[in-house]
Length: 264
Image (spheres, rainbow, N blue to C red):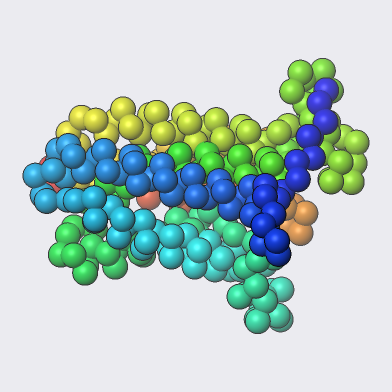
């Protein structure tokens, strides 16, 4: 049985300026996106339609806005609507934490739709471009969660070699290090599967559909090892909020994949 290392969340201090590890993981995520998306625009079908490195940089800008705005609003609406209805000004206090992936995804989808409209491109062409580049960013975020000692897992058998006690949880219960599970599943595994899938010609929209299905399924599985939010607990059918949000995501992904294939 292991003990969480209790990392200092601050990586570096420069006078009054504190640089957090979590912020650094975001910088790595953005760098990986630029690199991977720049590789994708050099190959079909994006090369033939005039995509450039500048387009990728602009996509990142739109995507960052979508992640921040959508992630925050998703947390407010999906997880604590009653609390924020009573404390509306706290919606803007993002430095106190509170982001939701599914909200961030909706924010990115909206941002990509805006980008596509301003550039005269097909929306699904844009989402197909970025879909295989997203999982590495998710992997970076899960490393940040692990360093911060947050989003710990449910109780685990003490005989599990990597069962981990999180002192910040207020208990001595051995737990699954669920951020590392999500790093491996939603990050590395999903990246490999999508990257390989997207290397061959696909109907417009199918890579995006594969992302929705892949993330939804892998996140659904990972949620069985992650401690549900204390203020929500488990919901209907013994499923967490994260799992319930994955259900329409997977359904939408399957529908998009089938629809795109029939239109090809």
